[in-house]
Image 1: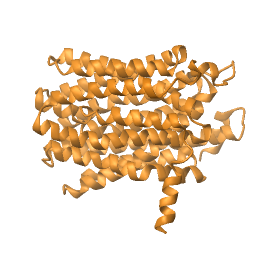
Image 2: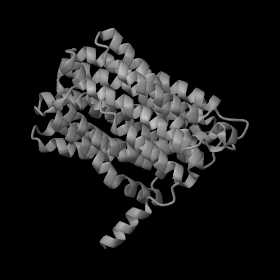
Image 3: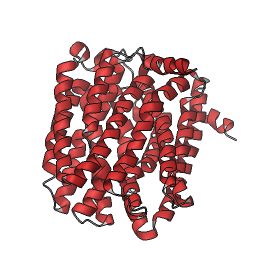
Length: 418
């Protein structure tokens, strides 16, 4: 029994290309050094003395920069290719990370965070398109999962090490590490991976000349609304939850780091086998995303049921399960849908939807906590989850209508809905 399970676990990793494995390695190195983000809200309050309202606005600039960066990254990917965009983003972000630690004035810091995320998130649409270039279509979801696995494995080390560094050294040290690891990832990308055929993906992807615009693809726009809502919910884990751990449960930075690291370790151990099993099942991507969205919302709502420390672990397990279901299949859905039009345009809108959540989610969370407290905030997070569940339900019917080949999709949907 154990040997069969081990063989199945190993088999879930087989068949992926060399380039995907190298991209995963580079991503791991980059993410392992990204220690500032989980502690950003604590850094702004504990080290710089900002109010929760001010922290909310800094986090909004974080999201705004992410949106602009993803949009620019998508445009550049279609024009000059994914490879150059990834290199430019990694090098630029490395430099800016080091500079940002010296910005203490509110407006300078907010502007610095905006520019940092603009440059850093140019990387995301380019990386998604690179997965299409280096992976077979049938391996897309598993390729995305491997990259996410690298991200989360790095994320397991990052917060734990980051918490220890804060306790023994300073927050400023984290910015230096983030900058150096970004530039190290760029060097490894240049040395280990060559751009496929040396041409932008758009020219060699085999996409038809007449391409649908992502902005007129209604089903894709509904999907993006789901991505936005799940992003608003999920991002509370990095914005409001660390403050909840600190102020309500009185955890230290090191303890917070270890607790957040639990998320990455669960994903490292379980995500790839889970994705491999789900891909072989007959469950649709829309249904899987629905289930994941429900788990995400429950992960925050359970805070209201107990103040014991064990509820923090239960919450983290629920949030992690939701993350493992929503994001890999969300990435895969976006990549499959991007075959209908320009890859860069489609794959830019996907991270833009998540970045828009950066603008709304952390800020709204901070304002709600400051005015109404944590209990009300977690209830509102679950209300947002309910809206996401309804949109997933609607998306499922749209996709079924499309698969049935109806010319008037909306007419079919109106008759199919109860």
